[in-house]
Length: 246
Ligand code: FPP
Image (cartoon, rainbow, N blue to C red):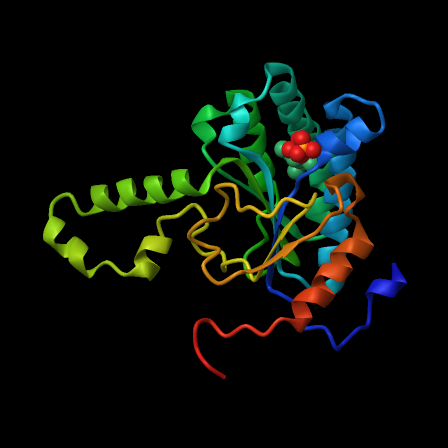
């Protein structure tokens, strides 16, 4: 644990987001079923939460299940949802004690109602007491896609303005962002994708406008504290200009 502490040189990103990829390949390399990879991927989630807290990252978000993932075989979908259920049952109390706020963002209408209820209860139980700030916001994107998010935001905005559509002209990016499911959460500074794929795969399309991207070959079940720390070191070297000159 000690080796992750005390480096004052690092420029620490406020929000790190991870596209967790490569569980299936990790399992296949070991001659196992894909679900074995997902189960080991949960260990990486735990390690990254710890590493985020140790390094002073304020928001950690993870792409756990995309809208497109509903198209996977039912057995795999059930396993992933089961892992989510199990993680909530086993981990929420520890997260609450560490003052980690747990949130799940995505299209709840597609989730099994009992899972949706368990998620909401877990979210409520980790809301900090009045006047207290969480150490970390852990955000899980589940049944999420960037296009879905933009579309639901546009629909909600249109509904708000239905009696005065001409006023839509004045809507700016900040008001629009307030309708995304990520409202109030700073955009990710760093988006990491594991497993050697270099794609955004319909993830945070709006929110990634100025994110730094890091594509690493490591398969998700092997992405642990050292890999997280290396990603922060790589981010530290980046020169962010936001379209301007320095
Ligand atoms: C990508 O690997 C991974 C996923 C689609 C699921 C990620 C889920 C977990 C790590 C477990 C549940 C999460 C939480 C937060 C408890 P892949 O299956 O696409 O791998 P492949 O590209 O090698 O096939």
